[in-house]
Length: 263
Image (cartoon, rainbow, N blue to C red; front, side, top):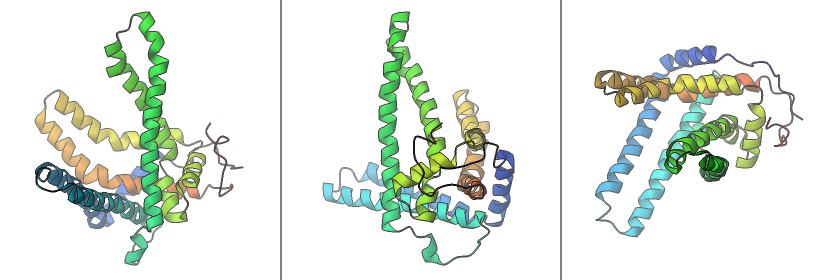
């Protein structure tokens, strides 16, 4: 059985500022990977829009596979780079960063499972909201506001608990189920710290959306620049530092049980 400390194993603000210090020293490599992700995402959207009426279905499937492998492969390279930097390893062989086919498939399986779980949670929240109809709440309000809000809250909690599964896949070479169990046990007692980290990381995006909603284009642009060039490159570093810090407090099994660590 895992024996994690219930007290905080790291401070959110300390982790964030340490990530910024690492980012200053290695900005080109980390931000460069984020830029490649940005280019890959936008290029795939561009090709999907302008080649939809030109190419055949076989070409579309091939392009889809290429961009899926490239996009998620770059994400894993970024995570691996962040882990090494958080562990004070500044230089490593190129192949150290390249995920194996097994690691890539496990990571992709995790994303698919999370998407399916979102649908299940959405349906569950819809069932929970049904009594509101008898209390006079409009169906449109439930579908467009209450149910999405409840689903978002539940999925945020789940995301926090499984947020480290890519790290266990890359560093320990575990399969998705073992990596998810480790992440759930790993985050036990640190949910609020991780929530604060995610809140800080999402602040620029929240500000950007707020300024766009109230039609302040200048402030929205500033928030967008901050989000693109500071916050996004910091995300992987912040999570990697939190991962390394909490690994120092690990005192339990390498294959924990799921239900004993959910709460």
